[in-house]
Image 1 (spheres, rainbow over the protein chains, first blue to last red):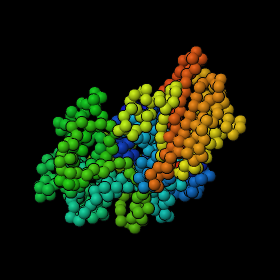
Image 2: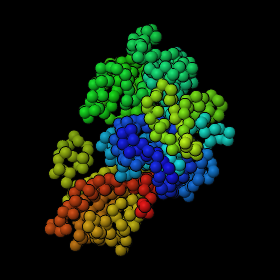
Image 3: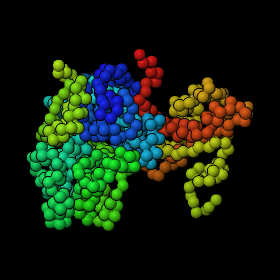
Image 4: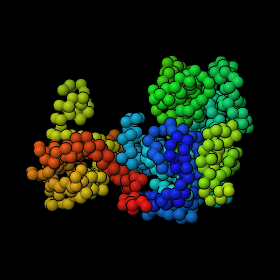
Length: 395
Length: 180
């Protein structure tokens, strides 16, 4: 089969691989019909995430048709399913608490030690996201092996096109959980840093969960316009002092909850960011955390901080004093996708959430490297690239 | 030894104290497994099940109710020994030791305890190897120093996966055909 593989920083290629096969009883094989490039794939593209190996198949947002099932899979051949990027067993302590992204059993035992060393506990298995998360081949491919297929994949009701449900695999539930982690109360103002796909879904979700106002922060005019379209007020951080604006727009109190939908590669011309970048390049630090610092400084006293943005390692100049003295609560984590799927699928079916507005480009799988380049370099207009393995490549 | 420290000896900073729990190179590790301890004990008590979760163990054959014959992958081909059960408390504890004259002196002890309510069981495996003086040399030293502790930890995780989910997480087919 053909698949998008990582070969090094800014070097991804589509090449040929053996087709995946059923290994465990609960496995299924999915023939991919649509798969997207995620903002967090850019962290891999930019080589910020350790333990990727040359030849690894990327991709964790995908859906398709069931073509093969293990004896203990509950799926049936021919079903259309969306697959969560988090691999979860459904039977461990964590899955019992619906903390699927903390599943104890989806990481192969031989991959568990790295996460234990780095984070104190092993990571959970994720598709196409380095060996730290299990080394599972990803979904930017013609076929994918899906472990625990009786727990993760959700069957798509007839009549719903790929483009309307594909983002259930990651970014829609991620935006939803980001907003849920804000514990929205009536009258609340929620500030969202980053109007990428997760940020834009967080804006929509915050309103659905009862936010009075949402303030969206970015520097790409097109992305800010999209946020405005969902009813958010906007701040362009290149033209405006974000902290000052937020205080003025909230009567000096600050936002009740703040969402960092940017993560470890936040950019912009700020002194702390320049220092972070220097430290990353000299291995003195790993993550650039300008947004995280700003979120903590701007959040109102006793407010909530929600971090859906991906961080991988360490930051310094972390404003722990502000966090403690202002009594902030922090909620974070990879998304418990399985927990949110039924409700979000229903909302899509009833037309309550629109996801297709995000898709700016549809490309054949063969042109995936072009998609990566575009998503990285033209973030204003390139809001989401969806790859279609069955689409013929342009000559 | 201080009486104001409830931590198990295997977590001690003092190597003397760590080795109180067994001789040779010792490693211990605890996992929470979401199953009653009687079931977990039953799986382990049938030593012929162990190759399913222990990566380096090729086979275990029962000789009688207390004795078993082990074939284990070593750095230079396979190592074999007979093991004898030294302690056996159903639902609570199994301990074994390699019989006299084994290539590698080896002992193991697995304890099964109730985890807090609703959380299944705590399983603690303590594995000890003693490098035989003048035998096989460096290769066995490797087998009996750091390697076995990593192996024991990973094997216990595989045991947990198997008992909770019925399968062992992997990305590798069991007998991958050679890639062309």
